[in-house]
Length: 370
Image (cartoon, rainbow, N blue to C red; front, side, top):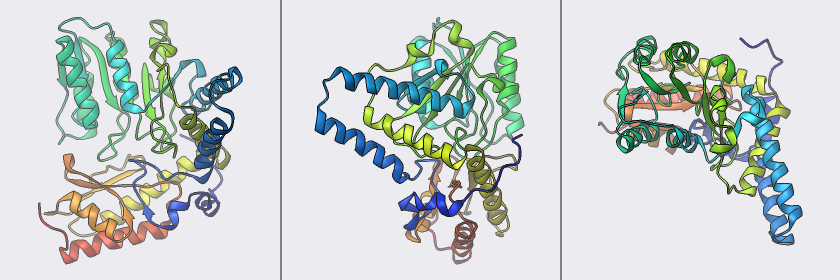
């Protein structure tokens, strides 16, 4: 539990993010809006290369220093050590690097849950096919978070690796990673956590969670550029250091943007941003739950995502209808729901407008049926 923090200056925060003047931006869980400081840092990096070329030893030294700073900044967000951080191309990239690096033997058990992102599930399936593994998808999508966690705990018996989300990408369910990791560790299994919807939206401590690997992106809750992310290697570092998971070639421009995004975050106060996300999601959940006939899938213990269903309507069509009213959301067909991502910059007025728009769509039955 974080200590109380002073309120966030939302007006100052929004002033640095131009896209917020155009939309009610409720899709940070896909890609957050870029702060102007991030764009400026990337342009500065490009301009330096344009003016000075790209072949000097000084440039390469400067880029290497930038990567070291990025590792330190990202480590600070999840309470890791900079030496535990590998810079990656994003969450799935980090997860795939771990899956590829595992010393698999035929018949090894790879465990995951039905609530994982489709790209992660496909990566797990592809790995199981490649190495002839026993892939166990523990639980069913209709179970409660507690039931899914229990299924995962049970499945850790005999497992080599467990791949699980800290926060599920669809309904925003916060899974008890500490409990799952403790069971896995007791049985000799490693745990790879997908932190895509947690890092930047929750207060994350990778060591307290007990994760061996923790992968997260730069473009979502950190508001950085696409093509950036991190993989934290904790207990498994005794076997293979974080540096072994890092690609050799990385974009200096993208990482200049990511550094600027994290600096911008630190300037506004990481804890204040996390608290603003929590408060916004709580308000959004309450307002949507008050709409008759509109079920909310997100439980009381949540992060920044809130998912709801408009009965009889295609979630992609609902998201499009909201988009036509300048409300950016995302339809999640896998769970038949529309997902709102409540950013730290989201105002109470915007959430009320979004909820009232959903209410109108429900009353008017204005969205095409599935």
